[in-house]
Amino acid sequence: MRLFILSFILIFSFSCNNIIEQKFDTVLKGETGNDEKVIIDINKPIIIDSTNYIIFPICSTSNYKRKSYSLESSGEYYQHFGQYNNIIFYDKIKNNYHLLNDSALNIQDFNIFRHFYEKLQKDFIFYNIYDTDFNRDGEIDSQDPISLYVSGINGRDFIKVLPENLSLIDITPDKTESKIYIRAYSDSNNDFIFNSSDKISILSFDLNEPSKKAQKVFDNKFILKLESLLMNK
Picture: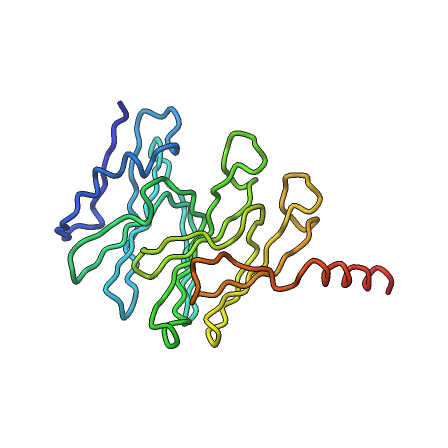
């Protein structure tokens, strides 16, 4: 039986209604290997301005080995870099909280976008996550594609945006249309690696229709024509 040490120091004054401790076994499933001791590291609270929500990124650390994290901000967005297993969303008005997902995740970083509130009356968080053992080496890690997920600012409606077999490069928000534009690698040379040797796909995702995954902007016929044009320049 693994020993779980719950470090709740950062949530020193919160009296919450839900029993989140019961979910930590699921949160860390598959992340601990054979280690006998696991520490749940609850990161500093991130207070989201003009909302009811405070979020706590969490991760598991083995043998007290801590990971490093960083934050970048620029007006309408906040980008959080780090390796997280899940995120706690705390509603400070209703005094309750929940996890982003009921299973362990491999979150590389996440971005809080405030761009869309004026049009949709809703803010969004985008997550870069490793979720598929694409190269079939028995591990889900940085050698696999980066998937893009999105949720509301409250951590609800957590869905995958990017279609399978694509690896995220970056996203550009367009608040006038409530869309994001995505650049992603496809494994076009079939070497099970996503890098600059592969073709780049451009996709758009409509936040008004979150049930639909991102769609390619340019069809294959147009891309083939473009390739032919450049080859014959």
